[in-house]
Length: 305
Image (tube, rainbow, N blue to C red; front, side, top):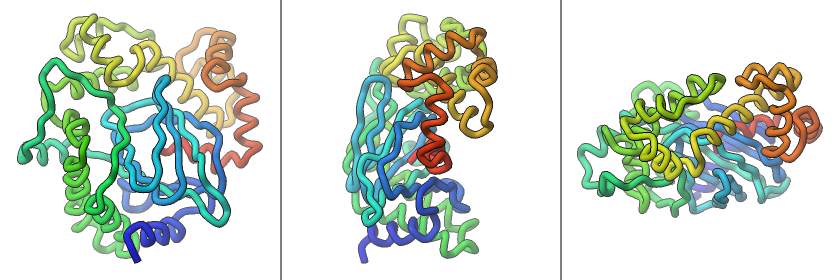
């Protein structure tokens, strides 16, 4: 039995028929679906995503990323994405895994590896799809197999996750992840600005303050921010607000006006207009459509995978 077959068996064992679960091995999320899903917005944190069976599409701004078994998708910074399962059936489910990435582990590894990050003036997109490797899949399998050996988790998980990070850095685009761990790199500075937006997304955005946090001029900050995220700071904040509002309405069953004010909108009508432009329908109609198509499993798609 190869690693993909073993991972399929573990996902079937520990994940619901349709839905996402954060496993007791904390860095690991699992997702399973027996059919295509709606397009669902998600805030991806730095993570490694692997499809074990089926296929998926995600969009970042106007960019479309497709991936399937044999490929990985990795995010090096927090990004608002919209994703949906495109290939799944009752007899051939979609199965995937997501593992949180740790900047401290990356930094320790990069310090002892010969990785070419690029010149100081370069910035790269914070999301990429790359061909995976057998050694990476095998290392992920060893992490997931800890679900069958919970007593081993305290000792073995740190060692095995270190190997996963190392194997990811060794892939063809490993340098794009390594940038997150290099002190003073553009990726790390933009990541600090993204954290400031996330911590204050319901407040008015001051680009000068973000540029200061990134230790850049406003014009340089705007350029590098768009290179990493594929959008402007204002667009990023708007997507963050709208995505969070959608999650509030789904998880807490709040009305559109309450969700709008919770994420920083002063006008419920402006919120409804911008929501409809992003999601294709007014807030409550969109939420009811999700709930009508199996709300628990669709809203669970908000976990990265």
